[in-house]
Length: 149
Image 1 (tube, rainbow, N blue to C red):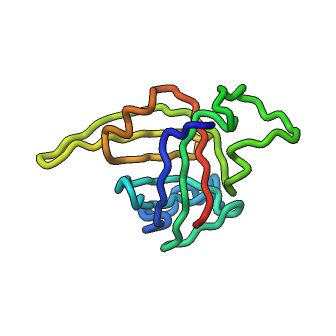
Image 2 (image 1 turned 180 degrees about the vertical axis):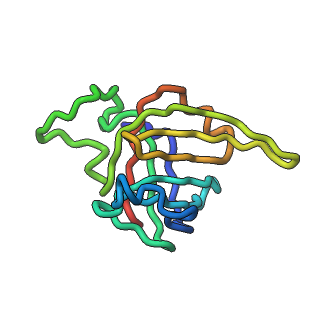
């Protein structure tokens, strides 16, 4: 059975909260801001809204996994067409990327961890509980899988 590194249901709070970042180069990409229900994680995610439209108020399940193989074996890194079932079959939007930064910040009340992943230039920032960040490693290859709920 495949072991996921993180999964939660998110609610979209805003789309392009700081204005459209990719207007000239990638006009079909928007940055969503969302908060998770179970772990209270904040996420900013760049997403191709032509392929997968998203709206404020919608909820979606997001999973981070190191492999798409259902038996949990490491992924080869190459797409091989065929009839082999994978974790991706259960989701609508999938991207592969690399974790490039993990950092912690602390305030008087609490410590938060930031996880940064690049999916071929589309970025994700996941901020929240430091115990969740302990599951990840720098330069780790990750898959993000999304489906609306």
